[in-house]
Every structure is written in C-alpha cells, then in structure tokens.
Length: 269
Length: 273
Image (tube, rainbow over all chains, first blue to last red; front, side, top):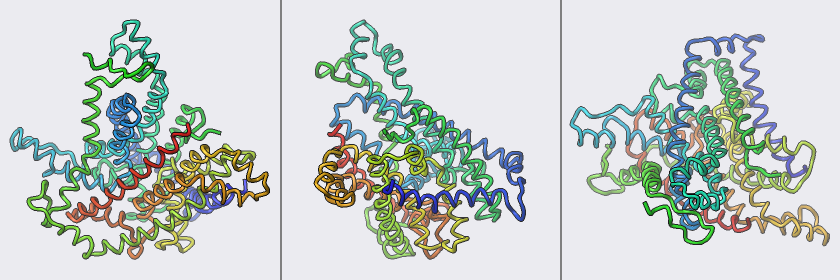
C-alpha cells in the first residue's frame, strides 16, 4: 500500500481535483444551474456535434476493423521471429506523432496532393476527389491512427487458438474459406469486440484529427470544448460538454470492462 | 491453391493464404505511407511542396534549426519530457510494485483508478488542468506542463512495469528479506536491477508520450512555454510550411529508434512466459 500511495495522492491532486473543477464549472455559473446541461442535450449545435462524434467514431472503428483483420491474421500466421519484423509496420505508426501523420495526410489527400495527382494523371483533369477538410479526411486519418489498437487485441485472440483445431477441420475435409468462417473467425470474436470498443472509446475524445483533417461540419465533441474555451470563452459550456463526453465514453469503457472480464488493461491479479 | 498447406512441423501454425497476405501488404503500405511521403519531401530545396523533390538539399533542416522559434520549442519539449520521464518512472514503478507485490483492501479498484487516465479522453484531462491551473496560477508554467504530462504518462509506465515485475521471481525478494534486507534495500538491490530492461522501455515510452503530447500542452502552455507539438499544430492549422516535413522526418527517426529498442527490450520479457 505504501508503494501505491505516492501516485495515488498525486492522482488525487492532479487528476481527480481537476475533474471536480470541470464538474463544478459545469453546474455553477453565479449560482447553481443546470442550464448548460439543458443546452448540451437540446441545443441544435450540441446534438449535431454529439451525433457527428458518434457517427465518425463508429464508421472509423468499423473501417479500422476491416483493415486490421487481414493484418492481424497475416501476423498470426508468421513464425515468431518474422512476426516481430512485420509487427514493426504496425508499431512504427503507433509510435509516430499524430501531428506528423496529420501533416502527411494533408499533403497526401489535399487538392493538389499525391492521390489527386495520380487520379488526374490516370483519368484526366476532372478526376480529383475532395478528401481533405471533410468527413473522408477525418475517417482516413482516424483509421490510420486506430489500426494498431485493433490489430493487437485481434492478434492476441488469433494466437490463443490451438493450431490443432485448424488441422482437425482440415483433416475432416473443410475448405480453407469454411475453416476461416466456422473456426478461426468465431474464436477471434473476443479480440474483435474488445478492439472495436477500444477504437470507439479512443475516437470519442479525438481532437487533433478532426481539427486538422476535417471541415467545419466535422467538429467533434473535443473540438467543441476547445471552441468554447478559446473562442467563446464560455468555460461553463465547455465543462458541460466535457462531462457529457466523459459519461458517453464511460458507457463504452464499462462495456469494454465487461468484455474483458473486468480486466480493463490486461492486469492479472 | 496450395498456399494454405505450408505447415512446417507437427502442431505448427498454418501459413497465411496468398489473398490474406496481399491485402495485409497493402495495409502495411498504408500504415507507413505518411513516412514514405514526408521523408523524401524533407530534402526539398524550396519553400513549396514538392513530391518527389526535384533536387536534394538540407535547406528545410536549416530552416528548422536556425529560423523562427522551432529550436526553442524543441528544447522546451525536451525539458518537459525529461522531467516527465523522471517523475512518471518514480511514480509508476513504485505504484506497480505496490500493486503486483502488495495486498490491500480495494486493490482492484485502486489499480483501475491509477490506470484510468489511459481511457479518459485527453481533452477532458486537458480542460480539467486548464481550469485547475488557472485557479492555482500554474497556467503557462513548465511545472504545470510536467504535472499534466506525468498524469498522462505514468499509467502507461505502470502497465509496462507491472508486466516486467511478473517476470521477476518473488522468491529472490523473499530471500533478500529473509537475510535481513529492508523493503527499500530489497527494492534497490534486487528488484530494480532485475527490472532494468523494463525500466529502460518504460522511460523511453514515457519520454515519447510527453515529447509528442499535444492536447494537454495546447491547453496548459502559453506562448513562452509552447512545446514543439503545439507549434506544429498551429503551423499545420494556419500556414502549412514545408519545414514541417523536416521536423516530421526527425520525429519519425526518434519514433523509429524508440520503437525498435522498445521492441527489442520487450522480446527479452517474453522469454519468461
């Protein structure tokens, strides 16, 4: 206990107290008021941003799932030494600053960006697609950010499968495709569900990606907090939005805890 | 169609079918695409975007090192990250030791609380610190930044240290205690030396988390304490300049070094399982 105490106290002073400040600011202007929450739950802007946040999070998490599964599957089928090398392709972006990635995507996806240059080269001058400062840009940026968080839970549940099951299905005459859908995929579902929930939780609070790759219409809840702090100077409203965001995330965090059998961070006691 | 019968030995895992391998390769390419684009661009010699650059030069690196306040913000980031690494290692390793070796009522709950900043949206932490620090008069101070980054980085150090501690045989500590060593002496002379790879991996990770962190820094810092990521953020937002390619390349190299050494260190850990 004595070893846990220093950080426990630190967390109380630099994490819990600030959260209490947000809560206080969200309900006290000059006197106690619930106005800011009423606004957060009924105002058109707030409802729209909450919906945008939810939509972007779910779409990005599902896109991430589709792109991550082949990667996890490929990694799980490598001999351990080669797996470490291939995994670097997933780990390097995980360790790379989100600003580096956002900057790169503005160059790759922009009007005169690399993708549009290629499209115009292949299909003529009218072939450019708008992929930056709109929903597409945000989803591409978020998906790129989220893939590592999805790959590793799925990889863990693929590696936990006994290879004998695969061989048994094969010996009984099942075709590869059937083995995949009847054995491998169902057994990897815990990883798929945990990874998807984690990605939804991470997208909820996303700030940099929508700010740099999205347009005005793609504002997410984190950007709304920023907007109220830096532009309208409405600390109370910013706090109410932050508390709503925290509650929304908590719902999914609890779901994730449920899926992982109460071991949210893989901590074994 | 013969690609799925590549079992090397009895009980070995089957190989990946070609279709899966090809789609995985395409996605690997997508994953490293930002680096593939930014690195060649950083050697361009003009103040405009060129991919691939027409001629190679270090012009943009010169801009980074000698122009504007890029260097000052980089030094500020180093200062914050080094102090954060020190604090989060101190807090993180002691807390992990208490959780893995200790037994006290409410341990599960306390552990969840200590790790919760990993899943709480960073914007919420940032706003909380913003409001809290403006009351305490810590807004815009380097000290405030370090406190904020320590809350953010320590839970990750705890997770790494907990994993590392499980590979250290508690009997070795018990033996030291039996021979009359105090708790603290045992920790210093037995546990910490055995934890060395974990400690290095943890500090590298904590350093990188703080060095790259932008949301808390954006809310807590002011123009005199601005960190590199905060300056990059406003640069991308307002006047995307090619110097960002040079900075990004340097950051990619930093990530690569930390990523590869971290992976190498954790490979040692896995042998214990």
